[in-house]
Length: 110
Length: 110
DNA sequence: TAGATACTTAGCCAAGGTGCTAAATATTGC
DNA sequence: GCAATATTTAGCACCTTGGCTAAGTATCTA
Image (tube, rainbow over all chains, first blue to last red; front, side, top):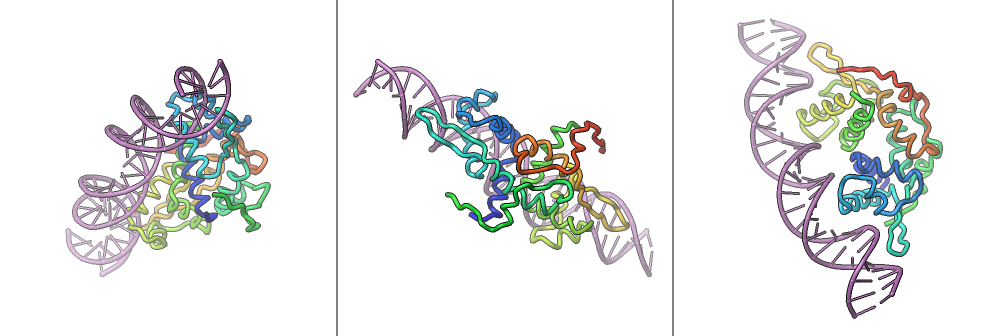
């Protein structure tokens, strides 16, 4: 997957307010899918799909532990995915601390 | 318009790759609608609507000069609109240079 | 193996987004 | 006022998205 597609996927994922809230909630540490679903008024399957979109965009990771599937924020991926764009459009206002996205050494996962 | 709605509008606007490219193009200085349209393979009316979305999100400003309507990047608005979210989710990776978004004194335009 | 729990996948539907062409509006210049 | 130019608005078609319920898969417990 190219860097540009990463960027597109990340921005599409961030377009939905529920998904943005999930990312904010995960800031406090990993959460099981059910724990996430319990924080919203929508059904568990809908949350599951949102989590799928976030995972597809590389913004979260999942880890199975017995019955439960824990989701965790992939902060670095979020920053690298949208970092190129932000640096291109408003470099004076927003600064990236880790500019790995520029080094060209990208991790390549499925 | 509330700050949260600003944020939602900005992220929805950024979801489309054409609109992101328009913002990048405007980084080089203001451009007339027709000049922007000429850079894309899609029709002028479609570009016009994209510009309307960007303007609605407060990410660009428009200025009429005779026949032409020039669009300019509103960099500070972009930074403030998405800044709160970025600071909430990945504060270690991304730093805001101007944290006006925290002062609560938001400019209110139509 | 059977049942309970946790989560996802499948299928449906309403709503919204994005593209197009044609028509309307605004401005310039003769 | 009329024609030309620049841009937007209107109306339509198509696809995607996001919600739901029902059904399927995976894991634990007994």
